[in-house]
Length: 145
Ligand code: HEM
Image 1 (cartoon, rainbow, N blue to C red):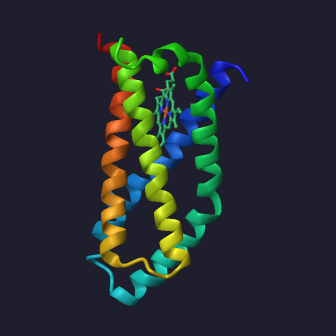
Image 2: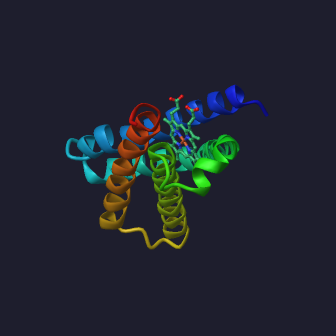
Image 3: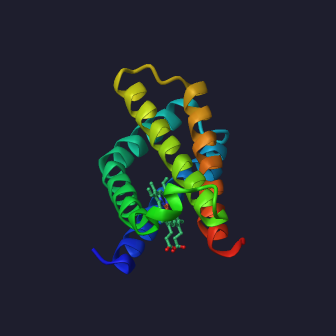
């Protein structure tokens, strides 16, 4: 697949993924304080079901396109300490795989019914922080020299 197609797929998948995480942290966390706990539980369950139905596909496209693009930067990634671009791209990819780890942990916890409010809160804020750093690195790696 050509680089522009991979980039377009990666960008759209990133928009959906980052948008969902930002919505959960910036909107839903505040709404929780304004809505009775029982009603909130129903809403969260419905959002969780909806998100679980499409998010694995979004992640597949995000990582598939990302890995396809990374193949074009093989030499920079093979020697990450010889260029700032290679270093920042490497950190971005490590953070992306850390996000994947968070996502799998959340899925497994929900399936095993071991997800607590505390764990969910931690996972949301941690992924949110990862997202901010990934977006900054995705842009800075081309402009910092
Ligand atoms: C949580 C997962 C990820 C997110 C949210 C994410 C997000 C982004 C964003 C927002 C951009 C900028 C795109 C643009 O401005 O057009 C980008 C670029 C890029 N990403 Fe990712 N990414 C993720 C995972 C990955 C992975 C796993 C890889 C490779 C293994 C990867 C490789 C790249 C590359 C090579 C670029 C540069 C594309 C270019 O502008 O030419 N990404 N990413």
